[in-house]
Image (tube, rainbow, N blue to C red; front, side, top):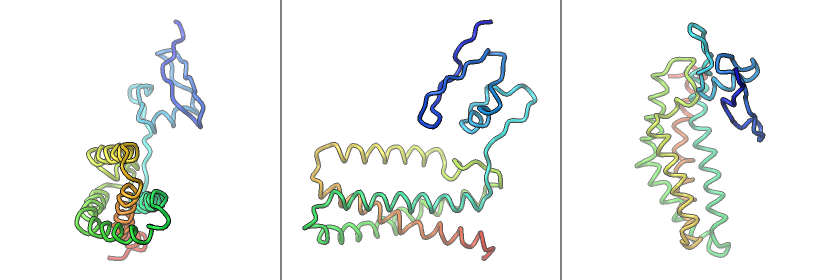
Length: 188
């Protein structure tokens, strides 16, 4: 039987071509990576497939960590777009807008993610912190940021929007940090 390339994927910045017969299984060192990616076509009937799973406390940590990290990065990127002489004047309104967005929009979103995690069992994969609709919304927001940067809007406007969204995410992450702390220390 001829050997055909079955799968091509990136591993540590290098392209790795996995060549195997359709009836063969991949090498043992590659199989955990494939199953983490959700590619389980190589598992034999009746064979137990390893799915990456983490404790619920890790999921409770992941949500606020991502929100805090992305929020901080957006604030820094927004400040880079602002003109230095107008930074204080423009940063204060963006922080006010971010506070409003946090209180009226993002608090509901992070709370729904935390309720979702509370309903999950230990051993759930890390991608389960959000539903697929929220992951789709994340992709749309990333595309919106790209369009905003490249559409020719003034840099100060882009900086205000980035800083406002970043500040909103950073403030809303407080719910996640409190839930994680209560979960780790078994507080009610």
